[in-house]
Image 1 (spheres, rainbow, N blue to C red):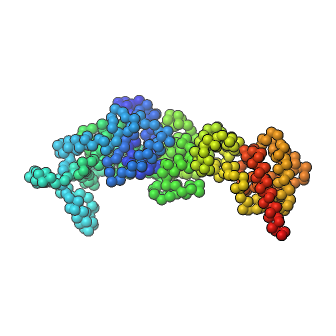
Image 2 (tube, protein in one colour):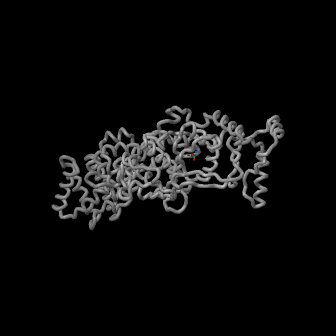
Image 3 (cartoon, helix red, strand yellow):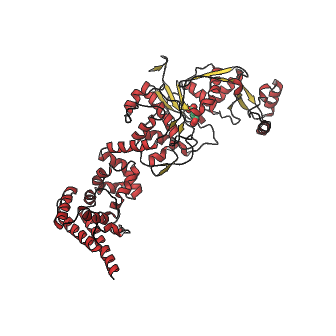
Length: 510
Ligand code: GLU
């Protein structure tokens, strides 16, 4: 499909590798992807790494793995190439240099030889005088002789945009309409630095043109520089892509802009970095669903939707330019929902790396002992994140004699004393030694029958058994837990618990 009936849609996600990918960046990429998929266009990944001082090598992995995790595959990019390769700006230096020179020739840019010291003094003076700081255009008016002298002396220089001194620049944002800015508010921005590397302003405009980008989706923080971008594009005589400045994302309280401060989410601290959500066991589908609704809304009456539905319905015009909050409770709710919608076997696959890491048990062992096949269906309802599973079932993966009864009350049935509780446990053990088959359902029936027979309330009977096998007050349903543990281990644990109670009793009476 084309935009304006003319050019095929091409959008780019153009992160700077200066830190880990955060949810704001991921949301931009997601909207790019949705728009490309909806229009049959191309989604391009371009790495804007020309600020070498802020370059963080680790962030490349974070970017790539974050995008892949969410399922946002790109059609052209650094690793897969494409017609406009390379897609890493530091490998495209030559073109920016040529383009900057071209603007100098056209009279739309000029060389500036000011030293860092002069610039610092200038700023200091402006500050002292209470004036707006900014380049004073000293080199814009150098005579030809002065320029030649600087060149002959090899004075380092940058190339600056020669912003018109009067008049206005108008640019259009798809969500906000035409925006007019007085040129005297603008600065003669640097386009090419002394080290020969371009600034963002030049590199992004050149690449958007060369890569035939039709729509630029980027954070609202770039709105202020859009007039400068318009001037650069006009100076070359190029066509401006459609600009869509995406709403700022607020922190979950809806108050400040999403900051570097950590936020508590369901008892866990987050900086809103994508890998934190990945590592905590949010499912990509839940995150996809969640982020799609940050700044755009699928349908106020339908919270849950598939990727296909989102692609079908997505529209740039409907993006709401007002700041959007991140309602993390909704993310938890969605994640729980997506977890429950998985088949137990898909959930097992998703849980294996988490459990293996958290429980210190290899994935092979987790698969081969079969415990998960019984436990997963019963914890599926109870977890909202994959990293919550381990605390539900960790007791099943420790050695039987490592279960601690720090709180002896765990082994005492309601209205029973230690001796009676030990008796109850012995009764349970006798039952478990014989019951056939060793399945949750059959064990449950046998326990109920026995409780009636000996006149003990079910709770008083089951409680000590739960405590004995798990050392916990809260654990997954008892009979599935017993089945998962198996006859031998269950009996061993009950044996330990009885011995513990006997010892306690002996200590107390002795
Ligand atoms: N490299 C810029 C950033 O990381 C991209 C802005 C844009 O998309 O044009 O914020």
